[in-house]
Image (cartoon, rainbow, N blue to C red; front, side, top):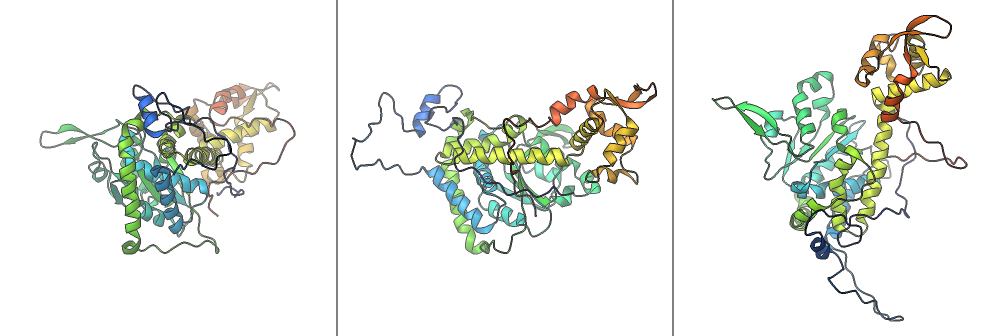
Length: 442
């Protein structure tokens, strides 16, 4: 079931962000010794001196050329936009920063995945990977490689950038997902540093560690497994409309310009390795989303100019959208939301019978419960879905004196608060608010 398509979002032009970690500007958070020197390397400040403002009425204006980082990111963004119609400006910013971040993988604690997904063919997924292929660091592209081949291709000294096209062939069906469970585990482990995979090898059957840490881009039809999506910057591609035009991509003709940008990224970012490792940028999100987006935000802060604000806008809007996707589409989270609505429909009783709860859930024709059998969700299926939350039914006594299987409302309070908190009531007169969109497929 596809969610209703809201109005396309756009970043507010007057967005004001908290002080970001921009090297050389107040508010840059750097850890350890050398923070002052790092600021001086990239800022306009110098020890013991202050920049003199031009005299009042002077026509002389200081000439400040954009830094190389901001210029190369702008050129990369222009090349991406030339060949691919991305679903939003925020998505374009995210892909640009993700590609740049591959050139500084040694500095990151987490290796963000780039999940390029679409509802159908011909939405530009493979073309986006083609352009990324020519601009990322140490590319390693595959369609259906085995887990063994992938982790034997990853080195700790120089991690590759994995590009996996047609990822739906790996995870699109239950049979394929089961067959490629090891690949999924590798991709999950490789999101964080120091999560090696262990294998027995050689005639002496010794245990050997293989590194897994590497940035990866995966393109496929429909969503990837939840554990991968949760570690990804998600780009939801859609088919081009009649008025949306792109240039034809020809490898022999067009790759030299892309390679030139790749070489500029390689010249700009690696010398900033130590500085990037020390930076703790102000993030608009928390937890795993912050882990995933931090490398992109640090690259933006290193570039300066408009990029710190653009990065945080993209991070906030795209993360919020995916959180909404999970609330509406994640099966267990959707169940918790449905149960809360069922209790509310019964005026929030202290207990609710299993039979009555199932009637409420199965009455929602937009919910996925019809897939659970001819009569929808059953008591057994309900128990299995709620088991990870530690919630189960029990014999309950009801106000009319009868007893039956059911649930107490207070069993769900903790899960509701953690996984699907109720929307906060609006302050002041209610105003219509357009839902932001991260390129939901049309």
